[in-house]
Length: 113
Image (cartoon, rainbow, N blue to C red):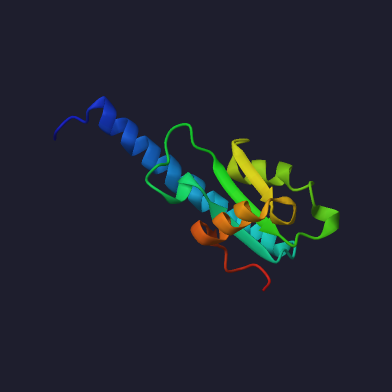
């Protein structure tokens, strides 16, 4: 069996980390959908081959009920197992950011339409 080079092991570890974090990001989307949000997106490098050892998880939410706004970050951190994430509240974000998220991100189907 050929020995993996250090670079190949790093690539494999990054690929595994990306897969695990993507699954956990989907769990976050499920959690947010249960809160009654209108839209949830996963976006950023986690959806691309540009994901690397320093990448975080990027999420966007629209229509989160007021009583949950700004209170969900702790639960998201628990689900992801890391504090390396960004949560964009789409109502508070500039239009060009929202457009980019909607064009390039992955909308979670469980959210209320």
